[in-house]
Length: 174
Image 1 (tube, rainbow, N blue to C red):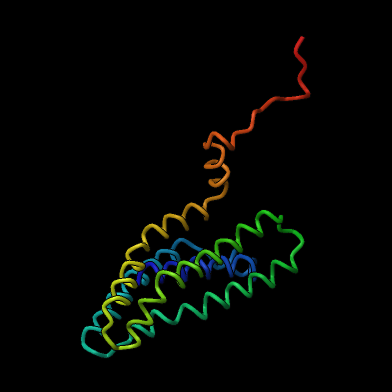
Image 2 (image 1 turned 180 degrees about the vertical axis):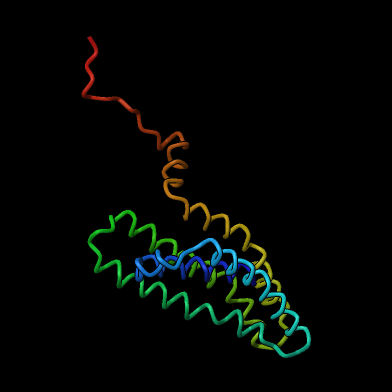
């Protein structure tokens, strides 16, 4: 649940940076970031505690990010298509992060949410969906790698087949 909440925070942050850059720049502070992180760590255990006592807010809590991710992605696509000041590689990186967040959520968490909503025990679906949820830390690592600026280029440069020789044509050897 915490992973899903942080993915929502990442998508919301990208959305606000692109769609409302001036508002976001004025409102961003360390206090608000710390408060959001504390809320992200406090709210999921409360929801889980309510779920244990059969109030069942857990599937709804986990299903709520899906329309948010789609809304953030569509909003960013619209804003970036109208923007001429953002370089195309930066546009691809921003959209790629949001698409990756949506894919991680859809592929890893949605099967478990569907299993929870069905309320019918199916061993195969349960085991498969639980295996996908357990892959979430690996997906978080991939998301972190894509969020870092220039890390993909560094990874590709470290692979021997992608190395480029730095022969400078302008310098002459005498």
